Image (spheres, rainbow, N blue to C red):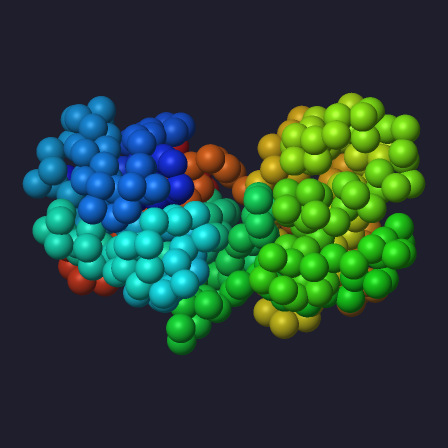
Length: 350
């Protein structure tokens, strides 16, 4: 039996998965190894290879039975896995500037390597878990983290764009002045854009815009007493789950921003499904339900047919990147005859 590996390279850790030609995932949960990205690509590439060997030992699969590897990383990078010459957001070492991470890993492993940015990899896994590999379906995923990632899958294929910057969903401008409660706030993204999705829907947005805005309205709030805004921003989600009025308002605005964004996507792609992942839904069932209902309620009036488009929660959140990278590599292996079996049954193959 032949297998493909999925590798999710982050700033401090690498996560691995392994999938068979029959779409069965051999690793449940996280399988992590230190990334040491801060020490530059020469050290980090060694760590990636060592971690893969450990993951293979864990599953009992010999290296010779791996026919392809899928890799995902944070960007900005080209569609072929070449980091921007300005460097990667998460990899500060100067040697990462303009580094061809896909080709470097391919040479080191002696195996074909496919590449996606981490947002697209997560989106591909969310799509695959709902529809399988060959459904001809379309989905849009928004993943809320430090920034706003995600991706668009059309006819089961990732939208990458000609330069690798397709589906940069966090930088789509939304009509944020329609959101009640934001009067007087100026949401500016780290990229410099005013009023894009990331400027309102991310941990960075809470830190830079939403929490300072609402602390002016709630000067006696317990978070105002911390005098530590970064720490306070990380506590907002937990307090919102406990029905704190101010923190619920912050997440209501994030849901409203997502609703406006999804409306744009619905009228552009007419997708089969919308998928939400990240911090806002890594919560209890009651809060997740409330958040999804807030998103749905924020969408402008739609046609009856459009209103039936479902909003799903991203499955396997911590492992979505590695699994999406593996799905991408499996498609590559099938197209080139590296694996013989081709199944298209839907659902999460656990």
